[in-house]
Length: 534
Image (cartoon, rainbow, N blue to C red):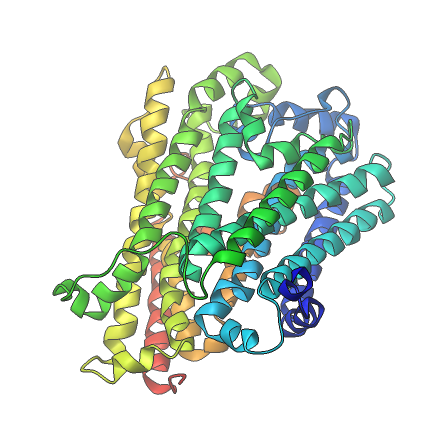
């Protein structure tokens, strides 16, 4: 009986590997290459102890602690300690995102498309699909952890020994395995892939926020977040392995729970039952705009709340940030480069750029919903009615633009609300809003790129995600990594004026908007002329 539940799990694992023969190597190569590149760059940028110690002082401020985690090994800030402190958290989050997407793709998404039903008609066990998915995704994380660990050691950097390098890779892989198990549970609870991804992403976001609040507080709260466990390894300094063991133990427990739920769940159903719809659709729902908005309503509400909380979490440290700068002469010298503006005001553009790029994620998701429905052969059903293609893509565009505006606005309100409470010298809401809303045109460019790809190159719509990741790296880590200006200029976020420390540049903003308009028009034309899948 027990063996029947897992019958042909190995064959299904091979099938998953075969289907992801391009996707998995891309994840492996990109994450490994970025990690090695950053580590090598650190040795060139911070070759002396004085330079590293100056960076250590910067890392002590509450804003940086909230973003990348608490600093450790400050007394002797080696390349290894610096690299782990600044790169581990965001790389671990990327591992979590990869695992979430891969698990949902091979479980709930396949169930929606009817593939699991077809597989169940063959001699396979009831738990084989979920087990095969967990096995493959966990295996990818283990492989990637070892590749990164040994690659870092192979660089021959003095402070990055074998144990620390392997622990760095293990921390990343463990994060991926943990969120593999978390997603496996949400797949059982949700009735569709969209909800499963939303719940898993929300869990990852909540884990980040809990860790951020805990790290700038008494640190106790950080241990309620798995991301806090990962940072607790203190890689390349103390090399604690017990947080890894803790994370693996929790992952095993969550996996057992997911398999137990899967054993009793009906195919196509979820334990969180969706409410029955109304007998008659409202007038709003009878339009493409209303339909697409309804399909994404829950996720967008969750993203709005998340953006507000993100703004509050960053805003809550602004008061301590000013005090820290006032007491730190070295940091004051390093950052007092703009006369007439407080150090908090000088940090606003960086915070706003990060929040704008995070807020772009739901906007692109809203736009790509159009191609997602097309791949599931649902678009042709709408087009068979009195609905034009221009209405379809126009409705998705309207929702995406609205979402991007709402996301950055909620983040600004959250940042200002918390910041105004904790800061002694309050900064006006207008200053906050101008510093944030100026990134709205860059968000429009990202949306227009998604439209362009949907209309002209529908098979390459995932390129917009790669471009967003690229923008995040060059804008957020550009100064740290010393990337050349031309790489920064490729991203629309690299052209945005740094308000309030810089004046508004209407020429640059107009040029960015023009690029967005051109890409949008080409995308509309391409969508009207190309064949619709199905």
